[in-house]
Amino acid sequence: MHYSHTVRQALGFLLGLTDEDAAVRIRRRIGLPAPGPDGPDAARDRLSRVWSRRNVPSSVVLWILEQDEPELNALVWRHLTVDAGLRRAIARGVPFGPGRTRPLRVHALPGTEPEVPASYVRHGLVGALREAATMAAARDAASMVLTHDDWRTVTEADAETPLPGYTRWALSVRPDCPQALRAQFGSHPKFTHRVRTAGVLDGPAAYATTHGPAVGVLEVLAMGHLMFPARIGAAEDALRPLVRQHLGDREEAWAVLAQLADTFHGTAPELVATAGAIA
Image (cartoon, helix red, strand yellow):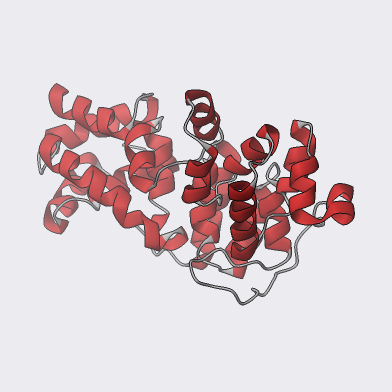
């Protein structure tokens, strides 16, 4: 049976959550080729392929940037067109990994850093954030919040005197906004909806279990060990019990899963449960 690249990656990721001997037998039963070598070039190709076709949540982008790998940053830059703050940070070599402060080496990037807002030049960081009276102005000002120290400064400024609503909104939908600051901004349902709509996730487990279509999510997770190794374990832990419960080593259940995967519109847990129930 011929499988698309996306389905091969998705099935391969789920098979990686089973017993190795069973995975070999299941691959043979459903006609799924064994995985090939997955070096840096293959990883870059896979990331480009996924980005060109899928709406990857902004938190996934952040998980990749947290690796602080200049080559990965350069690849993300090519596909990151809407978040001026992240683009500015990449262009300046700002590290994203926890506890890291030394500037990163920056690969040659097509294009330039977004223009520095005039309000920032006139009023400085906190002043520009407080002056923002429109969403566009707030986004511009928020794009200058780059380092861990910048976020700390913003947190302290908001605690002293709450920042304007547009500014809070623009900062909260940044995937790198500290959770403590987001909580400080409040928990109104509309606020929570905006954050979720912007692709900000609680973590990889939430992405693995609540986003769809399943095949696209699984294709992204299949890159996890190369693109966000510090985060992928949480996604695997969330899906592994479901795979074992609904599919296990039953070849027929895996055969049904392989047939459903490409056109199934629900989440990964729903796909796994449906395949198991049909089998």
